[in-house]
Image (tube, rainbow, N blue to C red; front, side):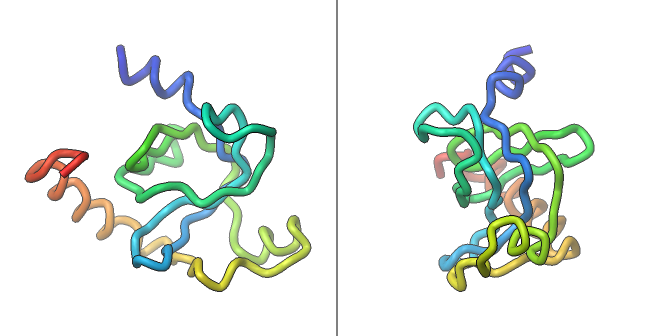
Length: 116
């Protein structure tokens, strides 16, 4: 029940997609609303490291928080929406690369905990 409550109160990323950050961690990039630390609605962000992702259920878990997920887009759609290219420090991630990453993160969390 606590997880359900946290997910319902979580900020929303809509639209969103998966990227690799400069440290090679997978993250989400998207337009965030209802973020507890970032003012404004629809501000484009890159999240902290991705630990869980369930687009069908509409939520993701990063190092720092839960996110509710809206519409998944690709980088071409991002660039069309924003009118500019993706930051070159962020690399788009293929869907095939997400599952192995999440499997490694589950093992890491089981071994070290989320803060390990």
